[in-house]
Image (tube, rainbow, N blue to C red):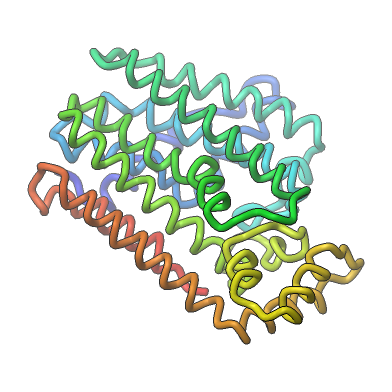
Length: 324
């Protein structure tokens, strides 16, 4: 069995060994740029940890790990363009460093490369693995569409928001774990419990990201903060505040989230002041803790020794321990 740190080191080495930028620079150089920035690489680590959990050979899932991270970064290239995000992992986003067309085309190439990576290594469960990956890819696009739809709606509910982030964020964590379990030929019940562990961890992770966007430090968060407020995003924080606030607070928030001032600093401050009045941070922290507890119940239900689950337990805790 590997420790979390050993798995993380393997993932880093896998990407260090890949040459993404040697062919046709305008297409592949941005791919190398995006993938060389590292980040947390949560999804390939989860995939390999799941293989190891059930006694599989993680080297047999090497290219699946690269593939799932390549797909994830493809979505980031397009998301950054759609959201007009200038910074990712502390560096200029691909569309800002190159241009919009490059972000689209290189992102499309990454999507294709992801599938090619999955096809590099045979496995008796490869058909189910590819079906899981395909379903996950489509669900993420559905989540992105929900997110876009919410921009034009004033009646988004908390339940709808949770479903959107389940699709946009959580299913890729759950999918990575399920794929890893399939590589190791785990029992169906264990595969399902591990998938649900990933879903609840992903939901909690996204709510932590919502908090970090509002209250985090740009230097440690790796991207600009306050962008959800500036861009009028319907987040868990806003929806909770609208549900909890009095008539005046609700009216003020609705007016602020309908505005696009040239200098958004005062808008961000006014929104955060209302969040503080309503103690929204505590509300979100409580929901994160609830989801984390559910995730741990699913992990506990997997029929493997507790010591074997330590890498996944440690990884899930580290994702939620990020400071705001």
